[in-house]
Image 1 (cartoon, rainbow, N blue to C red):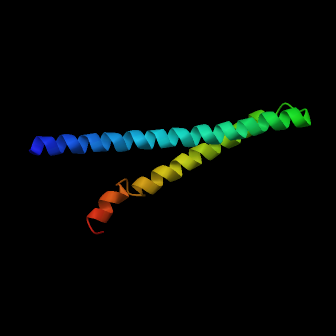
Image 2 (image 1 turned 180 degrees about the vertical axis):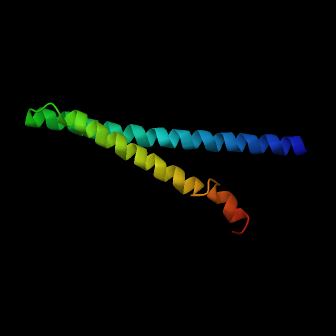
Image 3 (image 1 turned 60 degrees about the vertical axis):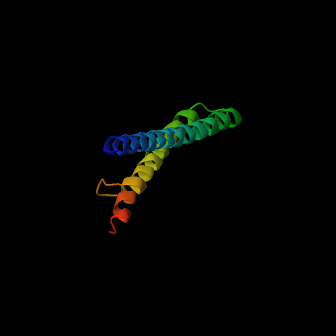
Length: 90
């Protein structure tokens, strides 16, 4: 019985980890993709060649910031999951 609970907890933790990784990936892809697409469009309209590169880096910075905020929201500042802290009554 104990082994079964341990396995279920392990599967739950694995699923939560995969969900977090997927969410971070989508945040990065959407931020970089949207700003790069905007840069390509602006370069075409304004006949320039530097806005795509500039907006790519702006999107990368925004994506990293969004991923950091997501991880910080989930784990907090002390490295523990907030769900665990609320279950313990803290």
